[in-house]
Image 1: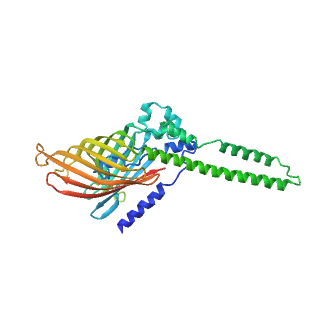
Image 2 (image 1 turned 45 degrees about the vertical axis):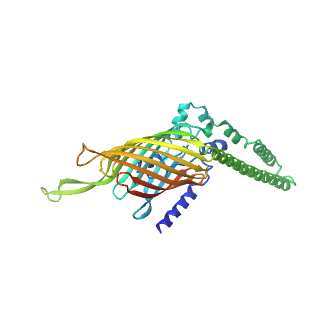
Image 3 (image 1 turned 30 degrees about the horizontal axis):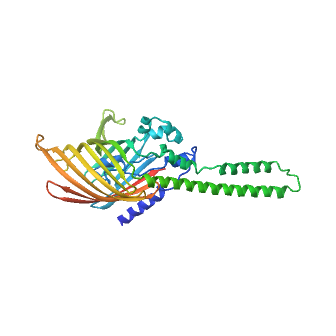
Length: 406
């Protein structure tokens, strides 16, 4: 039953997030709207990368997220799949402040530094386990991207070619006939017939205009899809930093003593409970990731990360170093990957702080991405983790739903 509910949630989220929203940025041209909405992928938020690696692929592809994004992480625990353990929100503040409501030309004319800063993303996420509630935030900056739709002259030209002069001609004809209709002599004996004929002509032209706009929208969508299909595996280089924290609700008692107004000299004591939120820092991470496209259907990417993280063995925070590689094959709509990661953690023992314990892990994940709609992606994977010290294995299924809130 729980699996059925989760599947129904994924489908409903897909239907909600995948809606076309042409009313956004209503002051912009259709070409600017389409150029801004050309994302190569919709990866999980960087904050999820800090939350115990609960993303199917720890190495994410480059994405130009020009809208708010919400991610759900579905984890399989003792009680089955649940939605509550993982929720993240991501946005690009510099883009939203300076480029979101402006035309595409403003972005093209901006300096390289300004365009780089526009890729800065902020994300915050939460994750729950049987022992602790986890909280993380992360910032990510794109240092290099092989292809940028908003600066690609050929792509922008293909969008402009869909906007011919036919629409302007139809609008002029409609306006001319409306002027003729307003100048008719209402007292003339042929007024009714002339008025009906002009009204019919206006209706026919408006229908032709609607059909032209529909065809234009389809051409723009086709141009966008063709561009994403061609460049979905473009090379990139990202730099990110994140913080890992835990939080819990605390209750503190406040005692107040006051004199009873009905009985002078008599003191009464009342105790109130005050709810507090206790947040503790549990580590950080600094990582760099990048990828190179291979042909039209493949991509190889890698990531290296250094930071601090609580050790499951010692319970203390220790240094963590991670390095991994990802091989992906497919298309813009769906692709599959195999990913390997090596983690090395050194942390002090609680009983003997001067003594350090080293742990080594190897993670192998097989999974993929399915772009259900233009604004929603389903990422899935099965991860096997091997502890080199004791030879134990852990098998973990992972599912993320990533949705752009247009």
